[in-house]
Image (cartoon, rainbow, N blue to C red):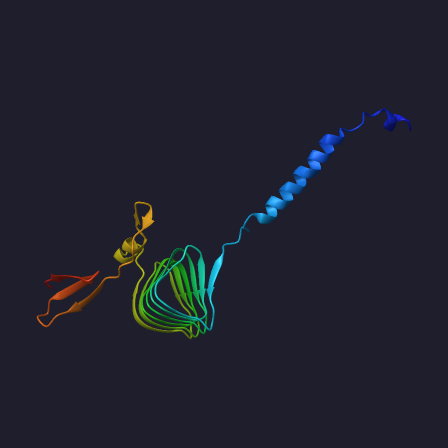
Length: 188
């Protein structure tokens, strides 16, 4: 009864060492793998960016940006002290600061309390919180031409964003402006 432990065959020392080595290698490789959290680029509160930004990760703007921000598959967050002078194209938008330009979101745009936005917002889902200020126009159609043009794929690469605006000339004809091309349409 007490002698049963003596009758068990001895363990293979090489197998034990290899198992220990393998587990330490696994632990080391697990530490070098990126975390499952999405990465975020941050433009700090004392930073001014003049030019276009293209990002394949979430972007938080606490500073100032003068240019187009393109983050089509991720989220752009504008902090309460942040300022953007230009267009923003993102999957999801959270605005707490000031924007002068157009906001285009494939999924949702949220304009938080205290935010100020002047321009066009194109998003199938839009939240304007009490206390936010908005001047401009809104397009919430999921089939919007702007969304289709901005988020359509071209040979595996996302198309360049293009907003369409309209104006009237002095003969009462409607002029559609798109990518610096002018088409005249007669009002009927």
